[in-house]
Image (cartoon, rainbow, N blue to C red; front, side):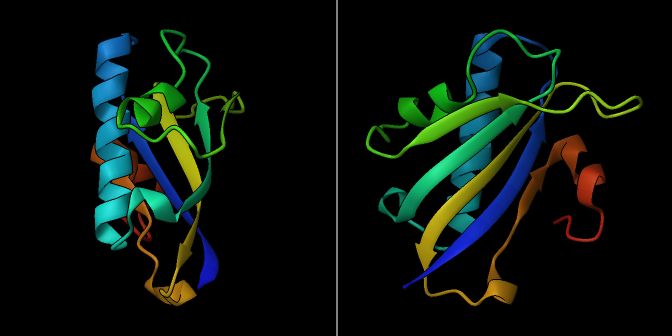
Length: 120
């Protein structure tokens, strides 16, 4: 097994805990599915959220999926003028047999604009 990093992002419509849980869970599930990963393949996950998201910790969504033994960290995204609002980003370190070029980074909904070069 090799350690790889998988990126992803999703934009929220509003700053509400239930909405964040649904969107972030969807992002995490998409990252796992597209990379043929199981929750046991997760080593650690970094979450960042833009300053306008204060309703909850994005990591709570992963805990809500039953992942309780993986180190998680939440941080605030840099505040850059003109940046997309209400965005949660992830950087997941995983164990996988995928080659670096086979890793599927996942940008959902409006967040595809963040990485048009790899948008699905």
